Length: 435
Image (tube, rainbow, N blue to C red):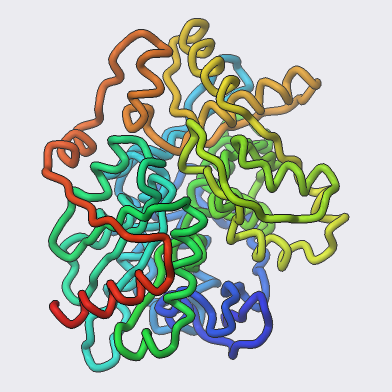
């Protein structure tokens, strides 16, 4: 299979080249030339995540030298559980995506990307620098996946003061081949700076760069696997398609669910949950798509005012009317996030992170509006990463998972950086010269 740019001005490439580049040369995002149609009956209904991922991704790797490595890549990346648990009522469920090494769903794509890039040749053996913008969780997952990997450097940009204290500690605790830069701006600034670096051909000639944000095929495509696994297992056990509520910021996680359904997985309706950054709900309500500066919220990993993957969503649904008919998106403010966290704990003993709380509130809204069928909320991060928000609301300590506790026990350091493209360029060149 070949991949082309959403902007149509770059040559087609194989998946290995697309993953290595991150961003297409014309500034667009790589998308497959066609979407395969897969028969759910050919999947093991109760298969492991690695087994289902390998089967699901097989056509996307067809014809590429990486194809023979796909089963090993999946086995290496997906070695932690993805439980689908009951949520409050018999027809509501939660897909717990936070049992990986950094306690967030970003571990799936980051580990797959790292396992893939370990198998890609590098011209002249030159070190490759992965630059990644994060609104909270992506950076730690990427840093953890690539930490200690020979020939790879990781540079994580995050908005200073706009991530939780534990998220900030994670971002700066790896050291070695991982550097953390705390940017005096928003996530949108970080994302803009990363895209500018990736599009700078002169910089790329001096410092070979790639991306690990959800603009990367190597991050996006493997995230389809956990939705496929959950939907296949649910249909086997209950005979029903599984409807989804996905909390989203940069649209990567939601787009993975959308693509999994487009391939033929037994997924019903997909509803998007956002925080006060309501670019998507505004669009789906009928207004023009209009990115705008992000605002800080309790669900900080979703503080995105210009979701990159909207470009891929428009590729999949070129007609705006058809796109609006296919999906719904809801806005959830901070007061509602707090109330949802508190109420779900008081009524059901559940403890959720702010992002998951957004999705749960949306599910509650859908049920109140008469939604039927089986619904699943994607739980994107462990609540212990947001103890300063969650613990005062539930009045108790949130136990820290062992892997997260180990990261928090390390010393952490991050360098300050202005929210300026030239500043990042200068930093990358200077670090390349001294490395």
